[in-house]
Length: 362
Ligand SMILES: Nc1ncnc2c1ncn2[C@@H]1O[C@H](COP(=O)(O)OP(=O)(O)OP(=O)(O)O)[C@@H](O)[C@H]1O
Image (cartoon, rainbow, N blue to C red; front, side):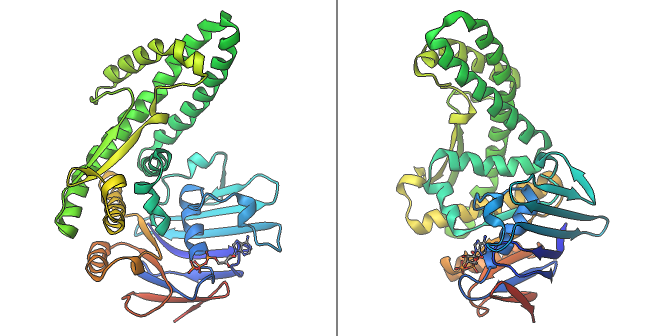
């Protein structure tokens, strides 16, 4: 599905307007602070219901207003989807798909597939494990419908388990409840581990080729679960996971924290055998993120049969000419929206100039 039209009202600095896009390469250009990234933020919001800057709804409402409304019309040869999000300050956000109000954001995820690549994504390599977990969780949620549900349930049970651990520290009478929660947490958590392992394994295959083509280096991606399981057999995962939880109950109560489970997992991106987070240069780390994003595109296409819309937020200027050319070759055939300060040096099918929150087509 590609984005055909966008309607915007009171979203950040953007003026009320309708924007039409090409189903190929769109160059959205303009000086700093004109609203380029805000447009990509809207598209990602319509895709996964969350801001890629982690902003709250209140923060995305125009300073002088009390609401925002955004609508995307998406199309392909067979189908058409209209996604609308309206938000009034201090009220619940309303999401509609083809005019039908949905109850939970989880129902939105997977309808419109997008991949976003922005300068902050360097933190996927450089940052903490929680950033890497969030990154893979978002992508897997788009391609596996029940994944997000499992994740939300897991977090709920984890919260309840940690709360109970605190109580048990002073009163050990409720040990039975801990055993019940352990069974529940293993049920949800095992699926998360399995899906993440499978995703990283598939991504590893794709990324090996990408990195070798770009820089002649060897990539290796490895999912690291703190239960130390290296199997895709869900029964084995569950049994080892449960053993770990049971064995650590005493310690967990002492520290009032659940020590084992996917909320503590991570993945490593190794280049030529060395952890990129620690040993790579800034340029190598940028290339690593580029591989993650292009690899993500390939996996989404393989798993769903559709190419995601690619949102490139001001990343071209940070890459050398060879890497820029490589991206151009890879993105042909996808719908791409590239933000850039200047129009020069970028070949596109449609140019959109933005100034003070308003777009002029050329
Ligand atoms: N809630 C809001 N209401 C009004 N304006 C806002 C709001 N939130 C952010 N802005 C403003 O929107 C403007 C455009 O931001 P945006 O990040 O889209 O810029 P940009 O064109 O991508 O710039 P750059 O090239 O510097 O990254 C900024 O000046 C910012 O202060």
